[in-house]
Image (tube, rainbow, N blue to C red):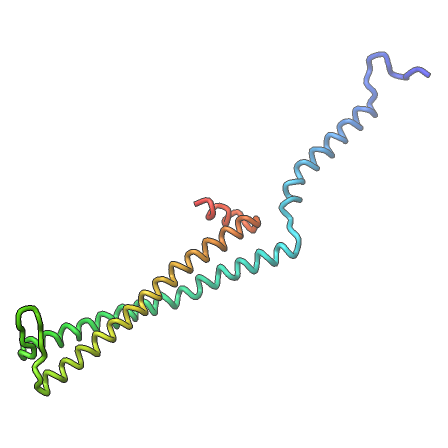
Length: 167
């Protein structure tokens, strides 16, 4: 059986099939990236959980800023009290010095001032320790945030996380 159109003319049906297949392949290749970005509900829940944890680290940090400011204010006040008490002790001549040592004179007023100085020193130590702990926790939170952003970027939870991770 011989072909009907072997004389050089193209079969219109053949051309239509060719173009329709080409259109189908083009549509598939254009739709594949969008199809690849759609995630399962489990993946979306995982991303939401990570984003929630990231948001919590920022919410907790807002209160820390207020606490840090109050703590620094308290430290300044206690330092001021400490220096004023030392000035009072020197002005009232509460310490006698021999070579390199300083000895407290045992008058009731000097003993009272000395106790207040010791109390202020103790307060300063505890407040400075609290401030150090607060600052240390802040740097730890930054590490936690970086880890969360890295996890969000690695799991392709959003382009903003991938950009932030590259920084």
